[in-house]
Length: 226
Length: 372
Ligand SMILES: Nc1ncnc2c1ncn2[C@@H]1O[C@H](COP(=O)(O)OP(=O)(O)OP(=O)(O)O)[C@@H](O)[C@H]1O
Ligand SMILES: [Mg+2]
Image 1 (cartoon, rainbow over the protein chains, first blue to last red):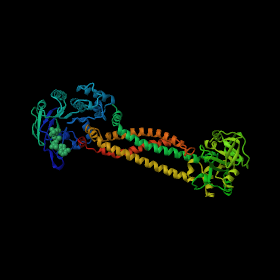
Image 2: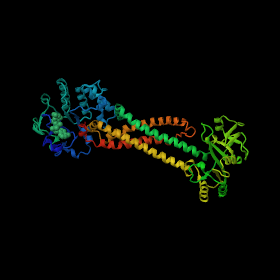
Image 3: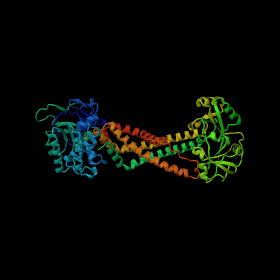
Image 4: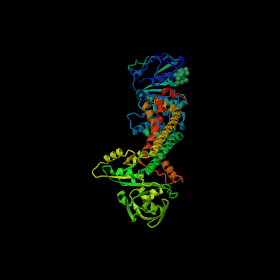
């Protein structure tokens, strides 16, 4: 898979990666090597210049309703917090559940539940600006989980956190993984990365390590090769 | 949380922008409603003379600028009376006169006392004037009470001092706010001997109004028939021009309003690109994003319409008190004014949010997210 930006700069220069269902993958590499770019392509926020993203064997280019894919299949935690500044914490989690089968009442109940799970009970009615960096990151995680995604993509969720908070966030990811969720975590932190099933190493738009899974062979492909 | 609350909270968080948009809508609605109610008030007062007399239809001169300058001479009246199906035609001369500051366009009707009953006039006090008297008058009960006059009082009008011989009622507020004089007296004072302004026609029983008006239109092509106040424009060109001016101003107000709404929304779109990109990235459909933007403007539209109508009430009340306009400007609040208010508000916001919404729908999530 290739992603070229303006003037032909290749942020991703021929990557070929397979992630199996239920895997916990950490992606590492120096700044600018294309980690976020790859995550965005998987999340269907952008399209590859050449090659394809296959999800459950299906090419994203042929997916008719990408909004539904983004909403229901993927949970995304951005590198920057990206919360809605004018809406309170609770609404920031509920916002992704509009247009789903859940009623207003159920949306609220689920958001409260998730916020409690990321230790934000009692902070529901604050605005993002009234939270610490770690708390904001946890709101973003709660939001990413709202629609019970099969695939959780997190772009440096611990980047701006101290080691205790980072640990806490990692434990959250581990518990989601234990529940069967496929987790792809971009991180600079080798301690965090070590908790994953596999570490994918990138450099200059290429994958230089961890292409194959070290453990047992996979059965169902989640994200397929280009 | 309901989508509506999410939307309202977004509006509330951006109070300045929301207020700005509401103001634009308010002013457009206020302008449109004020124009509508005052012009329709003018139209109503102008058309009122044809509603005073009880008749199947009214006849006036065709193509005059102002109904009161209509003129039907003796010969025409006689030919009208001879049209088959016309049972009777009552000729009246209508003039206006400034009585005092509160009554700048007081209506004076010249009529033969013999025609009073057929015209729909009931004498409620005193007695009618003599057919050829030049110093006698009957006042409508509203006029009498406004002017503080009663039977036996002296009333200066129609060029002379008159004695009030009676008070009448027509059941029509314009008729009851007027005065009636012997026909020759009004003709003499206005130097229009033998002439009437309007003829009020009663059909023979069993003949359809349509048949008779068709005959009149055919046999007296210089005259025109008016059945309802809304057909009034046939005889009164001023009202046609007034309507056109009101329609033109309404369109202008809507367009200016839409431009302001569109401009504000477009500016806010740049400011909100990140937010909208985020919503798209977490799975909002284009339709929902457009729904949010259009929903926001509709809320403001309804708010602006309500405030605009309220302000228009205040503005019209002020205009009616303006010395230059007292007794001339009457607001006529019709349902159509309220429908126009809502249509203006909704119309201009839909028009104004069209382009920004399309832009928002076409945002590429990632590019919007990284936008700053
Ligand atoms: N919209 C864009 N236009 C042009 N170049 C871009 C664009 N977005 C990213 N790039 C470039 O693509 C490369 C990969 O960017 P990416 O954000 O994927 O890096 P990253 O590995 O996530 O880095 P970091 O660890 O700093 O977040 C970088 O060199 C970046 O400058
Ligand atoms: Mg990055």
